[in-house]
Length: 305
Length: 269
Image (cartoon, rainbow over all chains, first blue to last red; front, side, top):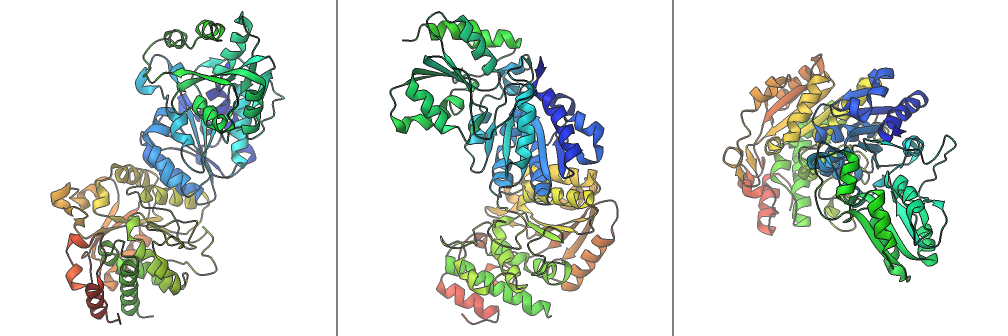
């Protein structure tokens, strides 16, 4: 068990050892986002920009326009939300090499409550031209994606969480840009998930009475793996998407947008935050409250026809 | 090289661009014309050979709406073909309404959303320090732009990181799109604010080349902190009916006004 943010901190250190032009920025959350790991080893290449996310994104743009590859971190709320327009105009419009690595996304933030639970960040980030959007599920996938985005030209958004999550993969994990991963092949119904909902999907698949589902991990929301999604839609009657994000604009929307023109006879149900804000509570209690825990999801899916 | 002649030619090109496009921002392009003319012709080490590289002095037009001024400067420096200017703001041109660094060689940052260019300039100055390069970063801000909160975040970080390789210039022409800055939002006083943020502050007549030269030399000599040159300027400078009139912030002259403007600037309409 480790959090994706812990994997982020470690991956940054590994990258820093390999690549001289990696620069890391943070906005007074170095211990939470784990960029503090990088700071310990490379203090001269880590800049704490203070509680000023808008400026941090602009500074990241200036560094990237000077040959640096910049990892800029804050909580998803303040990176994708607070500094949205700086990311759009100063980073994405000039197509600069800034990797916005946001932690504490979604309701799994827990006790801090709705003000700190970004449930709109995937929607915001994937709407911007040039931006690529990644949602790793576990520590191994996080490490691989953090290293991969170094070589993926232009702006990238990596969405990570606060809480510890079980491993889905192992040390041998290889990330392939734009390729989803079929974790289990079943029939009739497919669950497509991202982030920590992948672990929940795997658990749910063992609890279902009426279905033996296929499980797909979409670690890259943009560009989305269209070929895989079409294949899944053709071979199943029902798709259920799972995300700790609003059902408006996130993974579910991306899947629907992708599949709609094909007119494949496959229903799609989108589970996530249903146009409501989160609230304070323990992470597990919040998933129950919003019917996104394994029991609720299994019950919901078993009733689908 | 005659700076006055060059600045006059740049002013004519600014008017020509905005008139041809029937769109654009003449007032704030004319006010900062002498400063940017000096920057490109005398101060910065940009050349045709190094224009593509970031390893040289750089200029960020934080007040991106003054794009005609930047294009006129690049043209005066020989980095942009004169015949490109007539495409300004048109569908098939690389000269966007607000500058795009990927379209035009020599444009160092895509700007237009106010308050953001200064942050990018801070990032560039930090990069120069990291790489131990002596290249300098220049950034032009509008006075109305200083109503954006991000400007002060950027000033804080410039000062905190001791960016003595960063020279900021305020185009203090007192007017923004809705009127006098005093009436619209009250961003003044500037000098006290900039000093409180830890900057070396110089005040000059932004239309006096000797004063501009002296200020840039002082900024270059300053160690341990960034410099802000408050340049007192006249919005619409050089075209009598545009001077000190905020109506010319973002509007184009008609044919009569165009002819009059070009006459005043010593050119042929």
